[in-house]
Length: 197
Image (cartoon, rainbow, N blue to C red; front, side, top):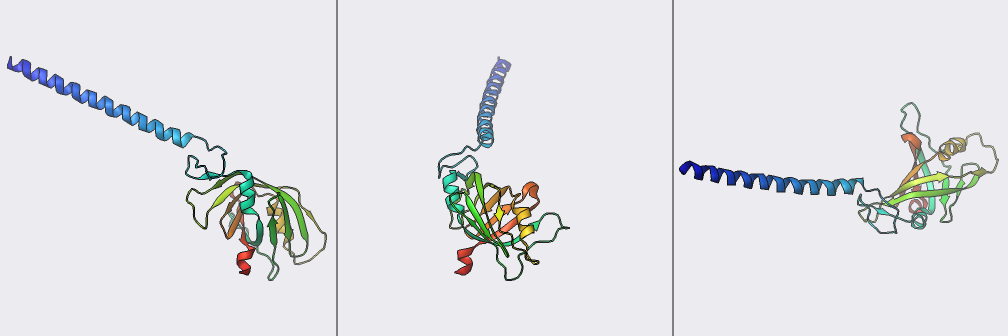
């Protein structure tokens, strides 16, 4: 009789332990599914201000064009290949890139004036709102027409060679980085009004 009580108590304890283990395992699965669903949910284009699954806000294209429109002064182009030297404008010769809200662009180079178009896509604004908020997305440059003056010291050929191939952008309030494809390098611009102010 004494042994029977011990067996019964042991069986009850074992059943309780198994039930607790099953319960804990099922809550872990729920938690895991919730996390994986959050991570694997693709970010969808939404209206300005909606938080996507990565904690950043997708913005409509109209808002993205409004954010990026400005005069930008080309500072330099750097390359990931260490054998390629950084390209900078000739001393005292600013390149001014103007991006308009209507998808038009112009470049006042060191010798010529260029006009063309651009388009933005997959635009996102960082999830943390600050005065220096980060925006990013895809950018594509359309055909660029240029005046035909010849200046021996001009850096326009190097500028246009890279500028015509850009694929993405990162923008802060004062800085615009336009990325070359395949992580080849980056063209860096400063916002003109801030340089003058």
